[in-house]
Length: 241
Length: 241
View 1 (tube, helix red, strand yellow):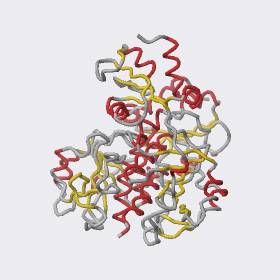
View 2 (tube, helix red, strand yellow):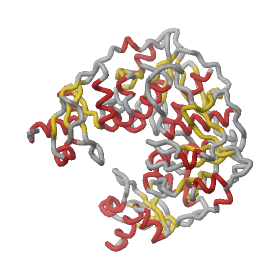
View 3 (cartoon, chains in turn cyan, green):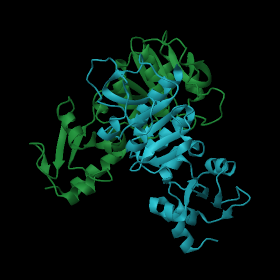
View 4 (cartoon, rainbow over the protein chains, first blue to last red):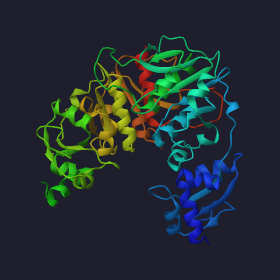
């Protein structure tokens, strides 16, 4: 049994304000909720339309539709406590760390978290005005990777400026061909906003400018790649070496 | 002045049936419509909320909102005739061709068309049950690349089976590490459905099985990459050589 007030509380977790107020986010789908049950995250409540998890409460399909953030509601939804990570865990002097400068699209952020997981990148440092990683669309797009990758929000220009003796890579039209550039096993890879790229303030900290060359290199076609796609190509290049 | 019947006609272009009946699709935004005006495509009508293009008709913001497929309506929308391409233009014995086996998500298809353009791939051959490339979400996600890349729909297993003496690449868990595999300058790169990957019927035609290795290779993290991301990593590897 779920009350009208509880439904409203859960629905409000779709907004950043609601998540901050309640200290929780929602995750949908049997696979994802199952993964969360086996993780260190704390689940507050599982709602399901049929018996799936022993601790889950049964709700009607209509109720599930009301609380679901998906176009087609799944059979299970969990309310999960927001984890807290320390930014000190991001150590770009020892490992590769991704930095996102105002990435806005939830689908792009989710896809980037998923590919970071694939390429063994455990920390992503985002500017404060980036999309929120516990937005339901992001959570779903990560396909569970949100449980393994730590996403931090901070004043990105300041954080980057404080990374002394650390290589900071970013893509620019005048950058060096990434296929022949020297790439290290540690450092920060900065990716910029979908429309505007890397901001001038962040660009100041970039020590190594890179370019993913189009093919053929002199043709005039698309002007840019989707940010998640560019991140994938860059991470693949770093890990290939 | 735009009539109620005309608004309904334009709105119906959001569906595949509507596009097929009217032989047209819609494109939104000053940049995209500008590019279409400079392309070989035929524009039937341009609607705009302020004077942008000389041949455009002025409509109210309210009317634009009604016909727009975007969350936030743009100031210009064009009704454009569907182009027709011959599948014979896809020549995998001479060039790289992408083949999509039931890629369903419009955002993924749009992103793949955009990256194909970046990596100089002019033809994409899709199974008949793939997302439609003139779906408004696909058109917008291509960022204009739909004007340069030819997207064909056909019986994919049959088309692949008919490509004799052609290398057909596909990604499989048991595939060869793509970073060390021999990759040719011509052939077909097959990408599969978001959830199920490459179908058994299509897999029969794959002559070269590849794998994008996770990092580190023995870790247990994400089980897969988003299809657009995987396509990007593969195309980048083919073009790097």
